[in-house]
Amino acid sequence: MSVEAIMTLPSIPFDSTSETGSQGMIAVAKRQRIQDFFFHRITQGFSLLVLIALTGIIGSLFINAWPALHKFGVHFLWYVEWDIINEEFGAAIAIVGTLASAGIAMLIAVPLAFGIAVFLTETCPVWLRRPLGTSIELLAAVPSIIYGMFGLFVFAPLFANYLQVPLQKVLGGMPLVGFLFGGATNGMGILAAGIVLAFMVLPFIAAVMRDVFEVTPPILRESAYGLGCTTWEVVRKVVLPYTQKGVIGGIMLGLGRALGETMAVTFVIGNANRMPTSLFSPGTSIASTLANEFGEADAFHISALFALAFVLFVITFVVLAMAKILVMRADKAKGA
Amino acid sequence: MNNNFNKKLYNSRRRANTQGLILSMSAMALGLAVLLWILFVLFSNGLAAVDWNMFTQDTPAPGSEGGGLRNAIIGSLMMVGLSVLVSTPIGILAGIYLTEYGDSSKTAEVTRFVTDIMLSAPSIVLGLFVYSIAVATVGNFSGYAGSLALSLIAVPVVMRTTENMLRLVPGNLREAAFALGAPRWKVSTLVTLRAAKSGVITGLLLAIARISGETAPLLFTALNNQFYSTNMGAPMANLPVVIYQFAMSPYDNWIRLAWGGALLVTMAVLVFNILARVFFRDKVHA
Image 1 (cartoon, each protein chain N blue to C red):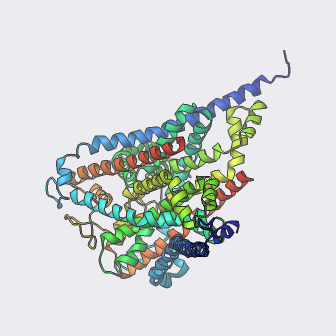
Image 2 (cartoon, rainbow over the protein chains, first blue to last red):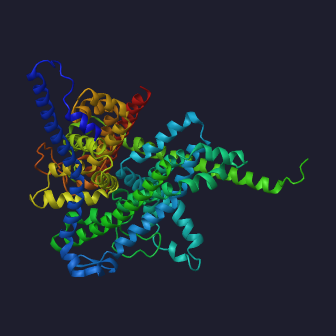
């Protein structure tokens, strides 16, 4: 408003005595208004490209998935079958694999990320905070395919020898939980994928947690310390409740990443289109099914894969949107 | 002495504190150990593959000896380069809109929200989207399609960092320029953007780092090419997809090359990340 008003007025003319001078100024102001108009619209257009891309993604996935969705209906979501030859497709196996591996990843990554965030904001000496924080951020920058290779060549053999075999020996015979540890101990499977994923999303969650912990008003912390709280009590009973929304938002952000991750999972999940029966059994996630099969798929199979992609996009969209809303609310609370 | 002092409670609180802090320290140690372990594995396996041939020879055919990664390196450079050229102006101008024009309007709010979601959207789905609009319609895989898929990832990164950096520019700098009669577009480009230059460069470097290692969006867009080719209208070799295919293969020399490529990609990504931090730190201290 006020800025607009200033801009419509010609600036102080250099040559205010002559009539043509001020007219020239008006002409300049007019020209600048036109330039401004175009600049405004161009930048707006570019920022709208993101919205166009989003609608394009949802639209094109849906259109391409339509033949499969039309044939199987909502049933597609819980149909336990992925038979390429007979063209019988259901998403249940891949959805279970996706949710299970991401769920395991969260179980491992969340406490670790919390520990790292607590360390970086409370106990770490100030001069070490920056380098340590940076190295955790670098962990986030390592491309996911590296995690995949690491998982396949280094982690899987160790996992098979030192975790799967002992776990199966000790827990495999137990009632109720024994079935979880059955199956071949070759280092691949849902649990292995979950662990590799955990280390991939760990830095994302830790970074968000650290950022929200840091904005806790010092006065809250100091009051708690003043009452004689230990560091741990300050974190658990003051910082954590205060930053709750941001922390949950960070966790959801990590979950969104874990659900949609392709490379880190594809290498270690075992890629079997069977319903997993134990933590060690090979499975498949939506993203890894896409990576494995899309290249060789034809007509109807492609449509089924697009339907899977559509399901994945909707799931991650909802998770990420919730994460974003929670983090935004946390920011608002901070601003108030 | 104070007889009400509850020694038992005091001790249990101290114990809980020590336990908690030790656990948090071990979490930190574990995180660092994993980073170092990954780097160690990369170097010990990758350095063996890095030699002159890796940069001068093309990817070997199945079963043949030797070979290098020349075509994949060139392909990756071209695709990442093109997508940076495309996404830089788009991301920066869109970022300018979000801070200078949109600010708190509904459109800007929605755009910001969607951009943040696109930042973490599953990259393989973006690849499928590009496949359906740029590969299925044209009839062949191409380097252009690969670049487009990478741009979809890079634009949100550039956009959001540009916006955040422009926000740090003090408002009175803008007001001073307006008071001199400068039009809005000049204020945004010549004053605010220039003041936020190093921050915007940080965003660009982060975007480059992010897309250099992306594999999933290239699988079904650029595909791969066993031969040296600089034709972006045709399928193009690129490091991430070559690493993926070679690592999954049964051939020893392929796996060795995959490690070499992995080392190359990771080093590039980490160097860009560290550069981005150095740039930003200079700005903060200036």
